[in-house]
Length: 117
Image 1 (cartoon, helix red, strand yellow):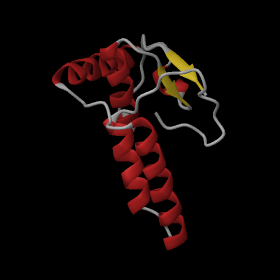
Image 2: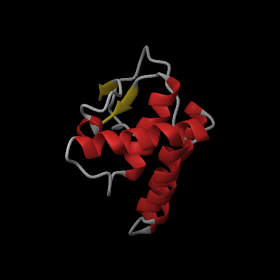
Image 3: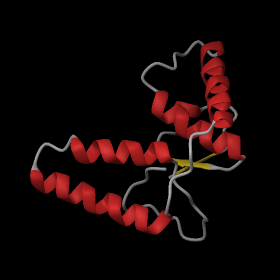
């Protein structure tokens, strides 16, 4: 789950995928300047302190990832370039929970329950 800083998640019980944390860690390392890197690191630290450990990408999650990739291909779309978003969606799908995302189009018509924020 990566959401805008101004997103209202009040009233929701949320957890973060370990894959989302991986994306955030990459963002810290890819920062173009020290002030940006520090701001991203601070945001990551706050998110981790708020939501705790990331939800693991398990063998069951891998199975659901494969299903999502197959569904994309059936729709004439390619999973290439969407791997991390699909891994995050697979985490939600495998747990039977709603995915909170700003990228709802990435998982449209794939059978993932989505709450776009």
